[in-house]
Image (cartoon, rainbow, N blue to C red):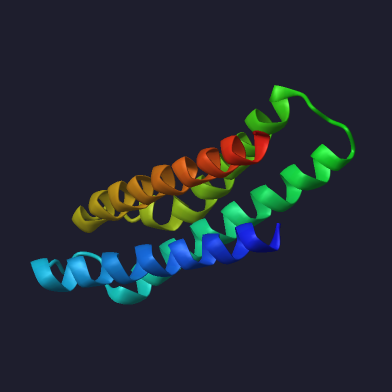
Length: 121
């Protein structure tokens, strides 16, 4: 579990640095660096909480596929709460912010699935 957390934090750092460098290189200014950091930090914390809860439920012998589905649903609800202030502003940059958020949401989701498949073998 500790190895998985270190690997996830390493991937977080790589994604954050590449995202910031890409925004600087392309000269995009609709999302500032602080918001980029908060998006990645939020997604990292959701992913870590997901793994902690998933491991806790697996130790309790809960082998149902609904465990993964219910935890993913909870992640989606938290993501909507995170995005609500941006959605409520109705600004032009809000659409880019939301697209950017969900692109990285799916990247972190792919990483979760990869780790879960790797652990199941």
